[in-house]
Image (cartoon, rainbow, N blue to C red; front, side, top):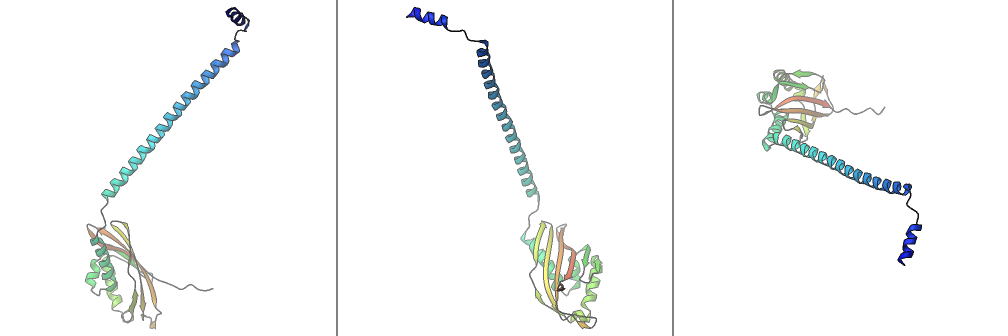
Length: 206
């Protein structure tokens, strides 16, 4: 039996060069694929690490910014409401003048612009002493809508209706008035910086 096996081995053809080259090529390709997988893994790990560091940095900056900003207090809200109440209800012009910043501006409903707290005070005194204005009254006044743009900057919207105002000898229809205030906190004090007054107009059906 041993002699027969040796005879079979001698009769078996020797492996060709192409066979060895094929084996070598497959081995080489497997090594490349393995290395590519390692490279892709390393590349992915670098990307994830970079994203994590960026997110951590962004979170830290946001937290730092939040901590640096002053917080809105109950006193802030009360001070703002007091400015609106003083401006819309008080007949004491000395008190009304105090709520304005030095460079305050008022664009009133008839298109006139007044700049500076002294100028505004003088016009308000003249307006309230006008017989036609004094004959009118406010019968609707909605609560102010207060919106903080920043802890030290506020926009306030308020609506009211005025009836019975006499202009050029004619009693005007009910005025539906929208007022927008810009109020800022300066050196710890809230002051009225800008005011825009506008009457609503009914659109023409044409």
